[in-house]
Image 1 (cartoon, rainbow, N blue to C red):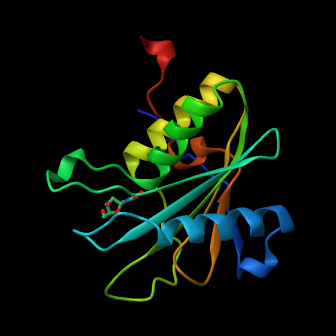
Image 2 (cartoon, rainbow, N blue to C red; image 1 turned 180 degrees about the vertical axis):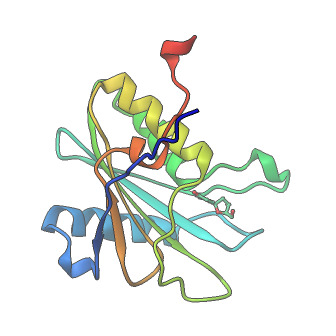
Length: 160
Ligand code: THU
C-alpha cells in the first residue's frame, strides 16, 4: 500500500475588483443571471456566465420544478444552453455567483458534483481547460484554471 496526495491549485481573490477586467464583466453577468433564477422552492439563486472563444458571453441560472428532481442547476443550464447554441465554440471561463434567502453568502460557493462532471465533459469535448471562478453574493472569489481541479479522479469517456 502506498499513500498518495493529490494537490489542486486555487487562486483566491479578495473582492471582485481584484479580478481581471474581463472576468469582472463575466461575474457581473453571472450576478445578473442569478437574479433571474427561477427558484420558487429553495429561493437559493445561482447564476453562471460563460466566456466563449469569440468573446461572446452566455448565461444560465437555476430552474426549479414542483417535481423537485426535474429542476436543473445554473451551471448545467448555462453549459447545455451554450453547447446547443454554439457547438463549435470553445468555452474559456465560467463565473458563478450564488445567493441564499436566509443569509448573505460571503464565502465562495462551488458547483455541485453533477455540475463539475458536466463541465468536465465540455473540457474533454473541446480539449482545452475551462477556468472556473466562483463566489457567494459578496466576498472572496475562488478560481481554478481547470474544472478537473474540482474533480480529481473523475470519470470520463476514455473508460467506456
Ligand atoms: N444549485 C445550483 O444552481 N448550482 C449548484 O451548484 C448547487 C445548487 C441550485 C439547485 C437548486 O435550484 C438550488 O440551488 C438549491 O439546491
